[in-house]
Length: 268
Image 1: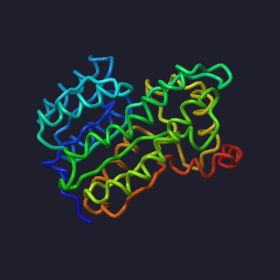
Image 2 (image 1 turned 30 degrees about the horizontal axis):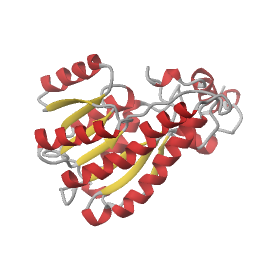
Image 3 (image 1 turned 180 degrees about the vertical axis):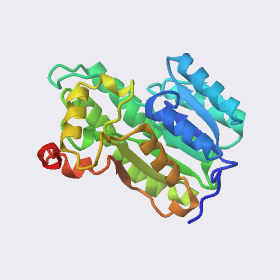
Image 4 (image 1 turned 45 degrees about the vertical axis):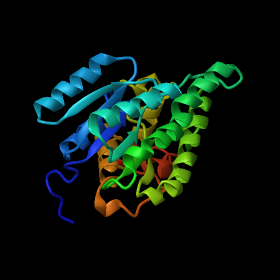
């Protein structure tokens, strides 16, 4: 397969939580591949304005959209803005997420509802309100971003795990229900990524040390923002149009070999 310089040129992509962390990496990658990008953020306009200025300087058309995805009315408003400013939408990457880290016995009903609403319910509502903008559009894609809390125990992340598991299940069902509209749905599950956003995770330092200790890869290699963004972009290619309803793990294989003992001594 030969890849042209801007294989997604002419397409419009909305990236929720697209100004920081993995979301910013996805925004940059889709812009580099030719997309007009709409960047959603919630409470930090600084990073959103900086990434917009960076990409506009490179010739990309960028719009910024402030919306709290835990609020149904703001999701509707976001999709209305996209329609008014862009006319239609080819790619929607739902990367935004938030949690409350707590032992389940100590979590409140308010904590549970906030985490569910921001991650799982928003997956449904974004798709619901995006259909009029995305149906039968060229290369239509709905891609959700989950994380490793659904595949391994992370201290005090039970609320997050339940909400992200809901996101993964909803993506499976959406892959079926959106197919008649020509919209391909998939989920991407990055491994542990060293960004400022994810350093709030209780297991962050331990997770990094453990992964480096057991990794069979040479050097100090771990999952990067760019690894995650590359997979999202590849799923948007025409060549990937028959991949649907999948949760694709991007972690260099850690999910398979994470329980293996340290490899450092054997490589010395």
